[in-house]
Length: 113
Image (cartoon, rainbow, N blue to C red; front, side, top):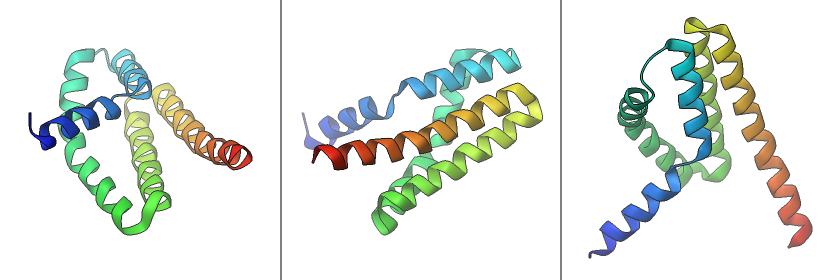
């Protein structure tokens, strides 16, 4: 198997996270749309955003990529607010916890290392 295929599979496994599953569930509940359809179409729409995030990371590092991700989370919250205020609020809270998690992880790793 080629190196590109192996590292691409590894990257695909890394991208999948419980946060995405949770947000898909929130959106599905709020809209009464199929969880599978949301996952498929959302994944397709996320491809260019993932490429942009990687390019931002390459140019401006982790802080730049994290800033881009926070903007996309806030954009999601604003879009969901138009559909369901509760889902928009849940999306915003998740985005804030991601920011907090990054700060706490940096703090803990500084203590350990």
